[in-house]
Image (cartoon, rainbow, N blue to C red; front, side, top):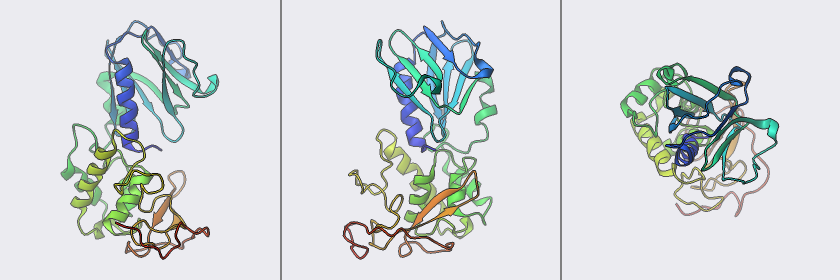
Amino acid sequence: MPEGDSVYRVAARLHEELAGRVLTAADLRVPAHATADLTGRRVLEVAPRGKHLLTRLDGGLTLHTHLRMDGRWAVYGPGERWSGGPAWQIRAVLGTEHSTAVGYRLPVVELLRTAEEERVVGHLGPDLLGPDWDAGEAVRRLLAQPGRPLAEALLDQRNLAGIGNVYANELCFLAGVTPWTPVGELPRPERLVERSQQILDANRLRPGHVTTGDTRPGRRHWVYGRAGRPCARCGTVVRTATQGTPPQERVAFWCPHCQRGPAPGTRTATRPGPGGAGRRPGR
């Protein structure tokens, strides 16, 4: 599932291409809305809400989509070949005289009244990249279940909207605790929430989910995706294990030297990292 900053960039691209323009083609390839005719309607805006996309149209309609794990939107110019996947994977088409947005493998395609948007996004916590961001409310929601593992609490969009598995792992590292540490044992939850917003804001217009400050490939993350390789801070071999239960099961990464707290039975990848486990990269 993409991080909130990725969804923010998708919304920004769609907004740039569609907002203010009239739909000359529209095709929702899902049974519930297969007969809906949106042609002739003007796109007012495309707004992100956590990991949800809200395409608002004149006449009081909103197209609600969600990417989850495999969905994507692609934008094509007039006459350009649609290359995002086979035609049977297309779930939505929104075209103007300027360009055409095509949604592939979208697991959520829902047309609703704009006045009813709360029905699909009202459960979300404060949006890390939204105008409603409220750090105090995010802290309150996280601490409402003090015994919950931190990574699980961060991934729960009802607490704060926009964090995916990359940032959940990296934020645990930056807090100096393992992903299984109970939220109530976090020394400064308000600092973690503040850092969450800062990281997503810094990455909202660039790819890569950079948390180290180094945008070079292989150096963007402290522990995420580094199983069996050195921690980017101390050089200790990063460990990994599953966390949660299906379908919400995720892979957790952590450094046993830099992060304190509980951990499950672990598995460590065997391939050596660049420079060996004892190397201590610059901070």
